[in-house]
Image (cartoon, rainbow, N blue to C red):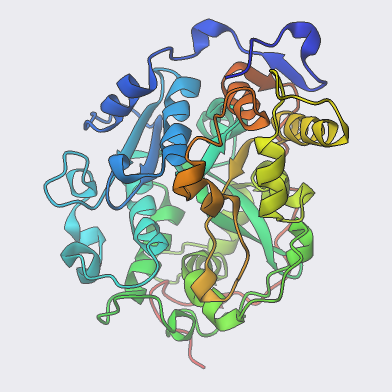
Length: 407
């Protein structure tokens, strides 16, 4: 790790965190703790999932999760659940089998592994509350400051926080890689029920989910790639919508009023959703590098300190890159991307997964190590701003939330 940064070295927008707020256990001690099951004693839970268990994660992903524990302190409990038969941290210790389709319970899913996480995240939040974070996420700010203070405030109207992207013109859709709520959220339960219904006819993967009777009336996502500076060939929309069907289920719920119990999805969403701009809070490094993974890898790998450091144009580029992220984004999501689902973009996650790069995110003296150091020792002075967006005037259907719309 880089040498300690003094107050005079800090760029604008960053301040030091008091050392007593950080968990100082070793990586090995925290990793061992994460592989044990811990009781749920409050809503202040961090939930993550890796189907084959924590020990099978790539080293950089393990370090993400270990640093969640370090950064958040004892008030928050990090739970990493899995789908390993007999595992102490199996999701079935927390959630009954009835919340999952037969293919998940029997272990016969044969599609993208991300959909296992889609089936897991909402039941955990519904039953226990807290924050779901995809394990490919580097946390740069405390959960309390990102959203939890506003979620737990009895005077606040907000009940569910998420980052959002524009998947249709003028329409922001919440992503599911970061979700924050207290337990028993009515939107979360219905959202999961809709997604579960997609798997009820014996599906073992997401093929043709966009044609399912519960979703077929909705417009296909038209990813607005310019909003996150993604310069790539437009994906196959149908394949992408199958991959992102979990998002579409939330869109269905947002656009209906259920006559059976009066739940008004549009009204609930407008009043109780706390959305943040994913282009700012989650995909900052991708946006400022136009999703160029090789450039990201090069900048993070450059020596910042030590004998190999050369303060030239590239060094200044890397310094501006890393300090911008540390000062202006709540988290870094490093996805692998749905290559088989129509979006062919190389990702930094794939480069760091490679065995020869297993320590590139912590290489001594590098800008990547400085990022890791800053994620634990720095805090931001800016406010995390709510996304300024109003639900557009759209057709709202009156129908049971698990009933198909007549076409």
